[in-house]
Amino acid sequence: MASVDTDRQQLTALLEQYRRGFESLDVARLQALWDREYPQLLYVPQERARPIRGWVGISQYYDALRTHLERGSRMSLEDMALDVMGEVAFAFFTYHFEGERVDGAGTFTNDGRVSFVFHRKAGEWRAIHYHESAPGSR
Image 1 (tube, helix red, strand yellow):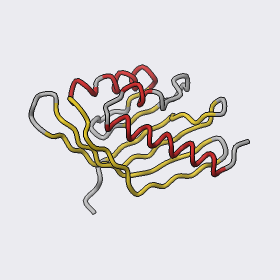
Image 2 (cartoon, one colour):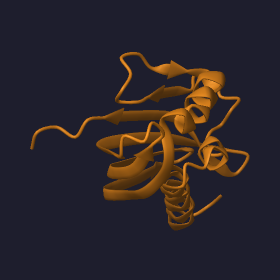
Image 3 (cartoon, one colour):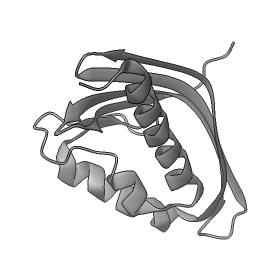
Image 4 (cartoon, helix red, strand yellow):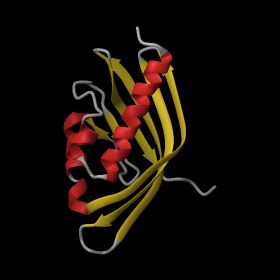
C-alpha cells in the first residue's frame, strides 16, 4: 500500500501533466489522465451547458481543442487543495490559461476553478470526474 505522501506526489505529477497538456495543447497528454474504462466518466467544462459523459465524449472534446486554438502559451494552477481518501482522491485549484486562436483573432484567455476526482486503478491514479466553473465575482 502506498503512503499518503507518495500518493500526493503522484497526484501532483498528474496535475502537472494536466497543466502542461493544456499549456502545450498536447491532446495525448490530457487523454492519458483518464481511466478510459470507468463506466461513469464525467467531464463538465465551463463553456458547455451539459456534461460530457464517457470516454468517447471526453476524447473528442480534447481532440477538438486544436480546432479553436492554434497554440497554448501559458497555463498556471493556483490555490491548490489535494486530499487522499484511500482509493479515491480529489484535487481543487484555480487556473489561468493563455493561448492563440486559430482564426487569427489574437489571444484567448480563460480563468476558472476545477475539481478533479481520481481513483486508484492497478496501482496508478486516473481521473474519473472533472468539473470546471467560472471564477466568480470575488
